[in-house]
Image (spheres, rainbow, N blue to C red):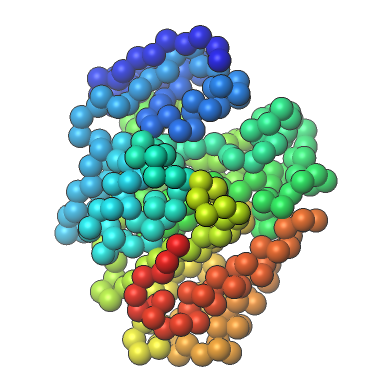
Amino acid sequence: MKPFQHIYARDTDHAIELLRTYERRAAVVSGGSDLLPMMKERLVAPEIVINLQRISGIASVISEEWGVRIGCMTTLHTLESHPVLRDRFTALAEAAGSVASPQIRNVATIGGNLSQRSRCWYYRGPFHCWLKGGSECFAVNGENKHHAIFGDGPCYMVQASDIATALYVLGGQITIAGPRGQRTLTAERFFVSPTAGWRRENALEPDEIVTEVLVPAPLPGARSGFMKAMERAAWDAAIISIAFSVVEDGGLIRSIALALGGVAATPLRACEAELELVGKMLSPDILRRACETLVRDARPMSQNAYKLQLLKGYMQAIFGNHSCVQGCATV
């Protein structure tokens, strides 16, 4: 690991000032579960590491009439165990509880989870891949069983944040602060597909940090949940995941939001599959059509077509039994 200077920020303004001063020579650490491994592998080599852990007031879950406000240093363990989140924002609590191991969740933060870099093994390995500034995505002709099945590239990484997928169905917003002031983006605008001019996975500028997450109150009667397939029972990123929020009345779907994780460079709202379900009584035929619609536009690579069947299987697991809709999904 390259030697670096470690500075505890006094507050968010101090952290932003340090980022502005040192520009691309600095990096921010919250829990450290993403940045430190990247530094060890020399994927990044900051001269200055700015630690947010001593800033007061940014590790909190505040329930208000309009919804919930979550500080960027709130740990994933807090999210998965918080009674308000488990009761009213279940998809978020379950997504947090699916991440890594209990030890990691005790230190990993929501801000860090949303800001993490790609987990693609070409990006993390000794390859000058497209996301690192190279000329090609090696997944196209290489080992690609965990890569995207939606999208046209040029990068076929998948978004690693489970929290992100949950925020897509809950209407979550992410507040960012930097030298130019503060801005709040919807989750759909915060997460971006890398382009030639912006080889990153989110809208954060190098001198900006995530400060809080805002989640509006759910619709009356809404239930949400999150399910995730992994190669191992813990620790792994999602092979695929599905987050949902639904208002159901005696089998009639009155409102629904579906988001897919592990299948594209960003989480994907499954809008056409939602249309197959909303305003209809759940039945095996309706559900079967929704499952086919869910994967209709997929373009799997040489080794990851199995994700299509996983997506359809998890949809069946969530909606095939009415109790999964009326209660909470299990991870």
